[in-house]
Image (cartoon, rainbow, N blue to C red; front, top):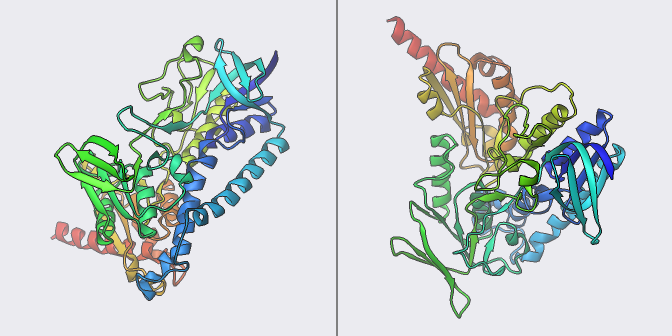
Length: 470
């Protein structure tokens, strides 16, 4: 039986970062990946393909140019599913090649197969070629990720009623699409297909969407979606989903409303891929969604030598945070010193338009009883926004009135996931409103919105101080 300092199950963002980190510390590392190729959900069905699909749709539809040339402007008139998938496959091959090289360069061992626990240190691996063998690890890191939640009452058929993995393999771009679930994944795919001129309906049982995002940003985002004729149905649960003889899908809501559509995407949640691990043999158990409970600072589970990181531990379930969780978990697992997870990290939603946020929302600031002021800038106020033909886009910053420090930055619009890092840096370095007022930003850029929003807040804060003194 081969023994390793660290065995990592899964090669997604958390797994690969953990494996490389432990290897760089001189430890022997084995990565067990059940898929045929490394990369996990992030590379093959999640982050990379969905973002590549988004970029391809924006390019082929000429979406970014419609502000100048009108809604009928398109780079390619008849966009097929094959057009969307071609670029995605090239990107995935590149990602896998980079990862394979990274493992080889750092002498990380790989094994392809399904792992199950024999005890807390021993794993039985059924390799993809049928061979069964056992390996032993001083420490084990679970980075198995998640898979789409598929409830029994939804008649998935892989063609017209599908989950978020299957949507990447569709044969044709549907003329109409109903998305059940207005979480991050559902909203991303709903808005991507809307750019392809698919008639999209979003159905959500809750009264709103993206509840962790600043309310003003969600309101602006919602307005933009409805403005382009997307149907948003909130506060309505699903009674029944079926497919008739003509191939059309029928969704019956609890209130009796019926939605008829060519395709249904069920995207209401994901579950941890832990059911095949025999967790009980290692003294572990998962919750009802297959997630592992861990210490939020070390990512250690209830069993001392077993750690977990990435989507399998729950919120925030981001590729970026999963990488950092994997790195920190690996350092703790091999006995190396590790920093605490960052307090503030950016959250990116790759919808159309993008949403990105870092720090406290206005609602959270109110709940904490912090006196505050906000500064807001619209992208159309910037010269770059006008050059790009942007009619929408909003940047909002929340500042403490007492310390003048930045508490949160929230953006909806073109390039939001790139722009947020300026606010993230100021936030983590405890910067104040004066940073945005006194510093120079490249002109013309969308980043100039920080200057506009900073001045907006600074002026409001100054007026408030005058009133207080009077």
